[in-house]
Image 1: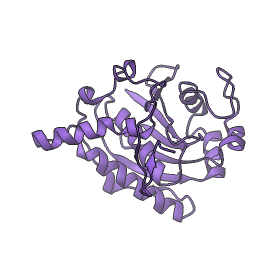
Image 2: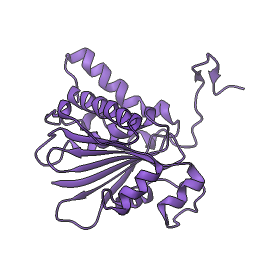
Image 3: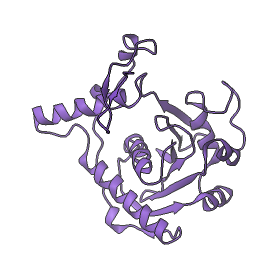
Image 4: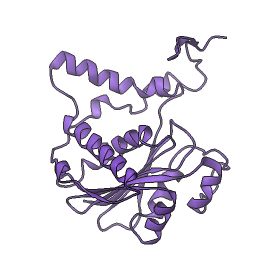
Amino acid sequence: PMEEAISIHGGGVESYDFHALEVLQSMIESRQGGETGVSRVEFLDTQALWKAADAGRWSRELATAALQAGPTLKGLQPGAPIGKLEDLQELWGPAHGVLVQYRDGMRGLALRLDSSGTHWHFACRLTGENQPKATSFYVGPWDNRNLFKALSHAIQHHFIHGQAPYPVERTLLVSGILDASMHSRQLEGQPLNTPQLEISYTPRDFQAFREMGASWKILDESVPQPPGICPNGEKRGEG
């Protein structure tokens, strides 16, 4: 049983909010009872974000635990305490969030509070436990080229076996949350009830597709990245 969870990213509004919501959903869908759907979504701009924290609507403690579980952050010394979250905006730019109320009473937040587009932090609080659970996802020494390996594996499995290896309902639900959050943003942060997101589903075991560390015994930070193709047609890794 889980009562609150936070996913943290370092990208832009909407584009990286989507990724952070997918990180959030991929972790919390395995809570006791499975996924029950979302009843309300609210976009929090910088000022509203900190007011909501002061009101106890999301946990600074969880956010701090998530950031501390990750790699060394820009502008901070290794192992240094995180300090006041609001002050991090001087290093990383304005924060914002997507606050999600689930039908079973759980709360979720996709929080923009980092400087890197390849940092993904997560923390949650299990019911009856005071100490947060926190982790960070390592994308590999070649950044997003490694990040998409598991996705490519999942696509291959889908074509070969004709069955999605993870619930398609997750993508539907996350897309709906993002859509509602952008409408909330347009309405200056008005919370929106989301009866259309009463989507329940059962998670699937995705363990076979997850990177559990074996690759990093072969491919580490010392291995140079091979040339690739950039979106503008230039070769990456040359010149």
